[in-house]
Amino acid sequence: MKFDKRTVLKSEIPTAAMPDIIFMLLVFFMVTTVLREFEGLPIALPSATKIEKLESKRNTTHIWVNKVGLVSIDDKRVPIQAVKNVMYVKISENPKLTTSLKVDKETTMRIITDLHSELRAASALKVNYSAKTRAG
Amino acid sequence: MLKRQKAKLKEIPSSSMADIAFLLLVFFLVTTTISMDKGIGLVLPASDEEIEVNPKNITKVLIDASGRVMLDEEQVPLNQLKGKIKNMIARNDKLIVSVKPHPKTKHQSYVDVLDQLKQAGATRISIAEPDQ
Image (cartoon, rainbow over all chains, first blue to last red; front, side):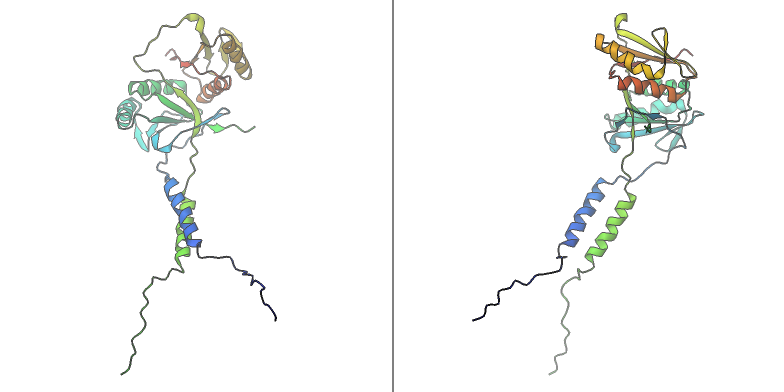
């Protein structure tokens, strides 16, 4: 008697679970995506070595300051004297707010000091000076 | 009697499901911007906060308009600031570094100094307002 017990080798990759895998990836990206919201002002960021990452995008407000002292908070142009009021509203909505200062490297400290006093008056005390990683 | 009823399809065709999902996936991959917000963190003092500090625990770092650095009345090259501050903190861990820039100091010089202080491990950094 002859036994035919050779196993038939399947040469195809099973694709039935493919949509599930793709959907899982899709859901991951949908959840993690935060769409770019703001354009800001054209600035050249300073560079630094010891750089920290900001904790969360959702707890961050961006303030752009260019070298002539134009200020933009989340894409709204604001005179520097009005930063206090704008930030006060934002801080009362979210007390965990960190202010990311995107300041041009040519901006003078006079402008930044004014900005500091506005932020202090609004009790927006957590700031982060945006910087690029220095090469080398 | 003629039975010509068509067999009705009762299932939604799912063979193109993967393609649809792929398309959506590619859309999200392309639009995702990975958070690139990096920088030097600092906590400003509250506006009504004034603490008396022992002058022994303060060291002053002055920055002039062209970015030169002065540490306690002595000019220091920027790349040596880190080492000097590190030594000072090793001697006195309550040390507060007070950074005082000139009104015309460029932001880059200020970030450079903060960077050096952070590298030296200084956690107590105070920003003095420049004389207007």
